[in-house]
Image (cartoon, rainbow, N blue to C red; front, side):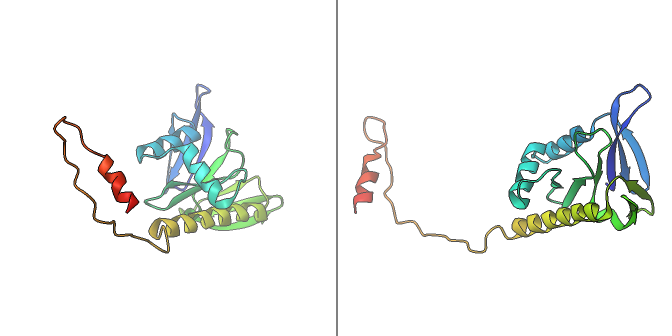
Length: 178
């Protein structure tokens, strides 16, 4: 996915315009519904992804988040996600940005470009933050801990049923006193 934004259909219903490669299509779900559905499909959810991103990046507004950790897909919003015209960008598909006054022209991997209502420096900071989240998440996912400890457990006792049909766990307490 290159980007996604809110768009009203001919009946006035808020939908999502999704751009994948050179294709663009309208989906009868809001951006946040699509993102949550996508995350739930792989066993995650939107709220958890945002909380996780904020724990890595710090508590910030309009935080990027990982949409698919297995494929390393991260998205960031150009403005508040609660706004209908919020555009969700995949930083992997942004080739270049150019300042046009207080706006930014974003050149995309599919050869198209889009102008957003954001200063270039502010927009570029969002790209860098998304890339930072992606790098950190991938590093942690591939190497969750620099040190792995394994302690060989002491030989324990075998638990057997007593005549009354219950297991004797009291013998374990005797082991801890040794």
